[in-house]
Amino acid sequence: MAPSKKQPVYVLGVGMTKFIKPRGKVDYPELGFEAGVKAMLDAQINYDDVDQGVACYCYGDSTCGQRVFYQFGMTGIPVYNVNNNCSTGSTGLYMGRNMIAHGASDCVLVVGFEKMFPGSLQTFFQDRANPTSTTNLIMKETRGITKAPGAAQLFGNAGREHMEKYGSTLEDFAEIGRINHAHSKNNPYSQFQDEYTLDQIANSPMIHSPLTKLQCCPTSDGAAAAVLVSQSFLDARPHLRPQAIQIAGQCLATDTPQLFNRSAIELIGFSMSQLAAQTALAEAHTDPKDVRVCELHDCFSANEMVTIEALGLAPKGHAHDLIRAGAITYGPNTRVLINPSGGLISKGHPLGATGLAQCAELVWHMRGWANNRSVPDTRVALQHNLGLGGAVVVTVYKRADGSAATDVSSDEVGRVNRLGYNPAVVAKGFTREQVDRVRSRKARSEWALQDVGDKVEARF
Image (cartoon, rainbow, N blue to C red):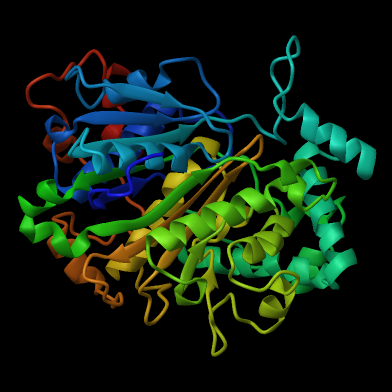
């Protein structure tokens, strides 16, 4: 059993690229470099301050992480390469937090990146057992197999079970898609920023009922990063305390035996999401009703429906009541704002980056920097990042003093972060001077930067 006493851990810096269609135009070293540079600029640190690095990706050869991190510096620190399916980014976040919470580090840089292939997710290794083959066998025996993409079948079947058991409708699932696309308009990093009517969502091509195309997340290229620090690291930099957001509770959970109880809802990880949420919220001494903003792993609208219940944001079987009441979007009935970023459905889903992009979004909210999509009286933010196979990470964020976030003007943000703009509402690149500011002063290599150096100013 792990020790119950943990040192406080704060997210001091975040950064991300715009998520883009996977067309091979930008390679992963450049994506990871951009996100890492932005996170260190945000944290106002130099790479020499970093004790350990965590690289998060699913598609790529071993040690892609070193390829990215060597661009920041070659200081000899440990760099870990993490792959935990779609929960990879937040698994790296979990690892970094544990390093600091148990005294192994004072400053950890976590970078998630992905260069994907167009189209639905595919299996690459045909000469060995698929890790989800036992899950797929349950699906075959209970619901059958169609020609739709495998993930759409798994999550779509969970949606069907919710309709059969609890009375949700096709329109309820379409409304989830409509809301997420509408939210993405205010996120400058979102892959898509188009708004659709409910009819357009419902009448887009059917993938696997109840899921239409506009209720399914796209594949994406992109990267995101976070700088995690200890209390002592933060105390040495008191001027940065207002932007440091505490990870008040966190849990990485894997599947329980319920996975194989022949329920389509359980087959997509309901019980492990429930376990992770209960554990993280308990550590944070927080109740689900206190959560005002949530970034939820909406790879498909059906997963958002069932996960609202797994997280305790609605009673089991009643998520659609919350949706129908307008309680998960902006308006007079808001109870918990879900996916202000646009979620995976509209923001995009580069697997290794998703968990860290969720982190960035919620950190911006808790700082008061997301002033174009904020939720009044937000004291608690909740993050859910799921990977079939399976793993899920649930993270609870609070301000260190427990106060509610209040909007900060973009002019003020640009002044305090020394960048001249608010990265929560404007997506920009960086200059050579800014790159020089964060790269190692004692152990840098221009050779490691050769594929990116000429593109720093050219792209932006």
